[in-house]
Image (cartoon, rainbow, N blue to C red):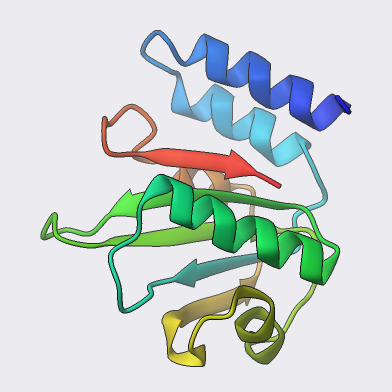
Length: 135
């Protein structure tokens, strides 16, 4: 079933075929939901787009929350981590249970104080090793 959020994301992904204006894209993502928290997850194993999608989809369903996330390569190029925006206040314990990840994998979980966080999460939008999705 197509909803307004899905259609917005499809539009934004199609627009991404060219070099994307990160600031404009971040504004669009910020409007998709009433984002409450920003979270960083760094599992002890190497992430891939399909495994990241499964983790985040499982979290979204379990928490009954909307989650936008990006998968970003670490500075050393060997591992990846996830940046999340979630439209619900949730504890690290609940995140761990919903994702099936070790609680130590949740590195950051803070309320959002500024829309600027969306730009930070999307900072590597135009890089080849960048993946994102919404559930």
